[in-house]
Length: 280
Image (cartoon, rainbow, N blue to C red; front, side, top):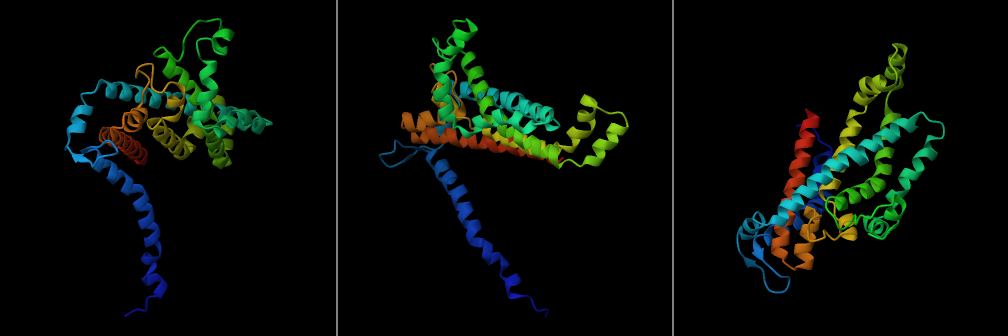
């Protein structure tokens, strides 16, 4: 029998504690949330098992349709604005002398929290705010649909543009120089060079950037809550805001947990479909 080093024989035991810790931190809260979604629970009395009643009620709730619609708008807007503009800024500033200083103003807002951005921009976009004063308009951006969602998407873009730009710049710097130089010798330049050479070489990093943006947009909460709290009424709610409102404002922990389970399933399914497509 061949001698197996002791360290090799028990190597699984060394990582087991870390794996168990991470699994516990990730899966235990979700399993408890899934359990609460099957109960009627107000945070005080003992949970009362009600089966799938919360889910049946949820799918009859008009607020769910509004939240799903707004969440999809956030996903589509994130793909077009923060990701698309981040790629544009990265490409335009990559070969630019002093490009780092050109990108710096786009990166600074990322240091602010979503709640902080909401507190800064809410007065600006209010009915008597600076935006109306500068544009000469009389629009209550935060009180009218779809202006409120569009305005929050623009604020979200202002925050996320810098980090997406930085990631794309890193991708551009990792591209081998030989294919680009060869394409330039063949006469490729501008859009043709980007489309046929640079963009295909950046595909792996683009998959990462889009995946991160997808997950972030699905769980959008802080900016929406800080700027509108899902209102007026509930017409700017996302799934994350609906989950928070039902759980911590209305103290319907069972119903809010059902929303959390739906949000988790939607985010997981969207991520799986996206990654599966990228692997193919």
